[in-house]
Every structure is written in C-alpha cells, then in structure tokens.
Image (cartoon, rainbow, N blue to C red):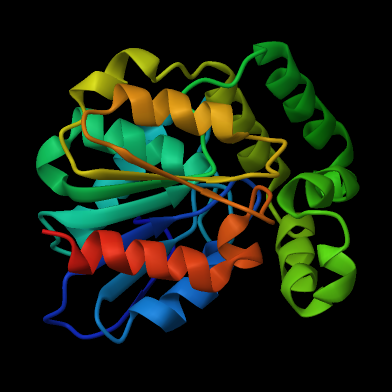
Length: 254
C-alpha cells in the first residue's frame, strides 16, 4: 500500500513532491500547496507511522523511508519529479537524490541535516515516546519548531500541528527517531547531481544554519538561503518567503 498522499494542481504541470518533518503530517505544507499548486502538480505525503500512513513492522532505516517515496512515485506513475523536504523529509530527499538520481530533477532541502549526533539523544527520544506517547514531546517540540512567541500569536497554525503530533503513532515516530540516530549522509552529498537549494532558519535550534552549510558546501553547485525570524518549521513561520524560494528554484531558474 502506498503512503497516504494528496495530489493538487494541474495534471500537465511540473510535479513537486513535498516531504514533511518528523512528527507532522502532509498538512504542514498547506501554505506551499496553496502558493504553488496553480503552477505545479503538488504531491504531499505522510511518512510511515505519521498521519494516515501505517507504521511498518520491525526496524526502519532511512533507506526504507526513501523506498516508500519511490513506491509512491511508481504508484502515481511519476518517473521524475522535483522534490522538497523539510527535516526528516529533507533527509529522505538527500537519500533519493543520491540513490535514485534518475527520479529527482531539482531538489530543495529545508531545515535539515545530513548527520545529527549523538545517536543516544534520538534513542532516548524513541524510548520516551514508546513509554509516554508523542504528546509527551509537545512542549519541547514547540520550542524547536517556532521562535519565541510565535505559538501565542498564531494558534491557528500551531493547534493543528499539536493535534497531529498527539494523534500520531508512537511506534512509527520512535522508529523514525532510530532511523535518524543511524543516519550519516555526509559521504553521499558530493554525489548529488540535482540542482539543489538549501534553506535554513536562522533561529533553528534543531538543525541550525551550520548543518545547512555542511550540505551546501558538499553538494555540487548548491545554493544556501538563511531565513531570519524562522526556527525549524520555517515553511510555516515564513510561508511567503519559503514559497517564493521554492517557486524560484523549481520554476524560474534555468
């Protein structure tokens, strides 16, 4: 069964696949879907164990998450697409561009990292979620997802994210934490041939700009943009700026 997904936009337009952050659903991309779908066919999906996608039985690695997206592309009969991913979605994007280069035309990597040690931190988070559920992470994650005061000013943005997080599958979330713990994509970065945009939030405590610079310096001809007044979910905190960057990268550049 393919990942839960949604397709929006003209059937004959360039296809953009959007991969979301750990603990979120495809709903996190609503501003970008609204902005880009008039000119692009936008595919959003839920990672395994997130939203309406069931968790897999047994261990999960980044290769499994990448293979899920390949299976989705096959299901939708999409041979080659643009891909943008944020956080976990960006990690999947790097895997796809390195291991399945024929499937990725242009690539955008938002608020992500190629390596996120120490592994023990991710394994501890997995254990916490298995013991206490995803809701136990809410306060910590809100402090990482957004800059100070954003949640109070924009409850209409934050409340649906919290609802999706707390309704999430604990085992699916934990398995993705273990995939991140084992991940080191740095050796693969120089092999990525897709034109790549790297975006960082200047105030992101989870994947700060230094992580984005590692990617941008290693991927041939990658371009880096650092957004002020943005933390980890920069696409929601700076929706217009992120949508404009994606449109420029996927639609307007040669």
